[in-house]
Length: 118
Image (cartoon, rainbow, N blue to C red; front, top):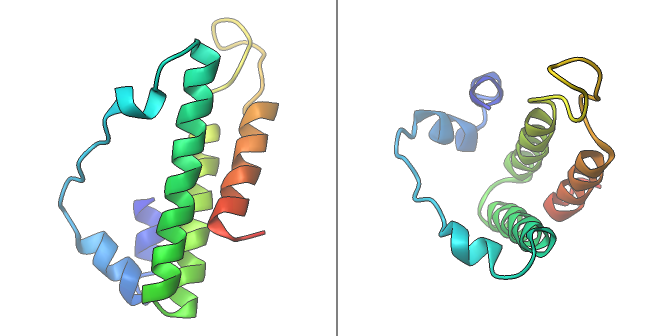
């Protein structure tokens, strides 16, 4: 993400984000997950993440220039791609598996939609 911010330093929003050294507060994980089965908790978390992507994209679209809003939406999708590529799924002891699972691909598609890039 830092590389993306630095690469777009000519965009005022990205310059401000790159210069910001504050540590944002973390949301209450129990509230995000809710109650229920593990699968239901993951669905709750997924929904909350997508709601935040949509809200952040919408706020930036209202407050920033069109170029900044577009770059920000792309940044959000880039973060989803990087997270999905962080580790292989499946396999054993690093052997086999896939870099990005079907569920991760589906989530990236949902992030694209929530960010308004599709």
